Structures are given as C-alpha cells and as structure tokens.
Image (cartoon, rainbow, N blue to C red; front, side, top):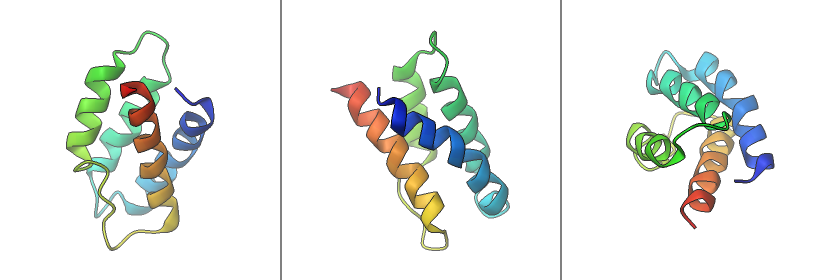
Length: 84
C-alpha cells in the first residue's frame, strides 16, 4: 500500500470527522478503519470491504469540502492498490 496515501488519509480523516461528522456520522467509522489500516496486522481485505460499504464506494457528497474529497480519494487509491 502507498505509504503516502495512507499518511494523507490518516492526517485528514480526523479533520473531516470533526468538520463534517454532524451531518456525516459515518466519518467516525471511516477514521477508525483508516487507523486500523495503518496497523501491520490488520485484515485489510475486510477493512476495505467495510470502507466501501460505509462510504458508498467512496462517493463524495455534494455538501463537503476539498479535504473530504481528498480523504476519500486517498482511501480509494489504497483500496485499489490493495486489490491489485
């Protein structure tokens, strides 16, 4: 997995949770999964499966900022790399 994409997601997930969490409660789980992905012993297959479910396949809502979009893009990149 791309350490750059993971580092970006780890940095941004708590920010978007704080900013958008009231209207997007799924962001708490997104942050938790992102943190779990950073652990060496994580079952990435099941984590990415849950992440796709929680985020509706990384769909970007209309009411969010560029940081939200960047977070989902980084997570999607990680998912694609893990599946390759």
